[in-house]
Image (cartoon, rainbow, N blue to C red; front, top):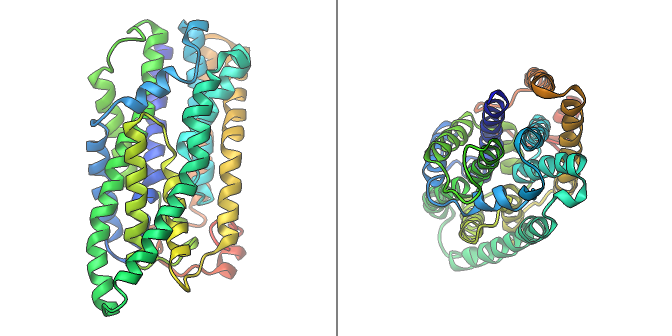
Length: 384
């Protein structure tokens, strides 16, 4: 029971990091264009994430039953696998947040879980067909499709409104952005909060509290919804800055096209139970909005770094999850779990303290993207 409680709390902590890590997906374009004030944006996003978490459990079912072969392990061993995977995902989330990298929280979670499963059970312990069909293929297609849809949408938006005065165009499209950004937040809740629901469900099955065919308990839905909403309200300002100012200089028509493309793709994936990376989808949409606007500046060097980070997410989070399992297994029992938990707490404190050397908050999230200033501070991920 003690290990189960630690796993549940750690899962909710991951959900919290998912919230502040992925706020940029919904609100970065609206904040960058001035459609919403930063604090209003994250409050609105938090409320809609909370609501969206209750709309479906299709993604949760995929996470709970589509990664680890439940027939091959159970009890304490499965709890430790899940715990180590969560810690690996949290550590990668915090690392990428520190450097302002909009990487995928979903892939961090899956990578951590796959890594801990492989070292615990071997490669046969992973449901590779589920990983390929419901994680890997959508990960490759989502940003490409999002970029294409956003580019086409942006081009048509500018063509249709070419005779509208710029001031009037900006004002009206900012209103549209509020609606489209709200839709992304709702979609984010339906997709990302469910991933943690699936992990807690997996832990409850391991403990024997429920059966694998049981319905999702309401308290799991509620706590996961609250955790991701709270994390969203805290606002991942470092990542919001990268996505809103570093990749493309976004004008309101671009922001509307990017947000609409992201929301459409995320909601569609949630309907089919695909645990899509909202980060990659939103980043692809923002990039596509720059491609679709004639004369827009796209910082391809920044885009290249983000893609590199995406490629590293699964293996790096997997390595972290594997190491955490090895430590917990070597010590054994509750003591091993507590030592890994202490490592997680220590690493979290270190990264939070390190972030204060170069703070990003509501006061400077929309500041000009100046490479020389940021390079002098040694944070080459946030500026190019």
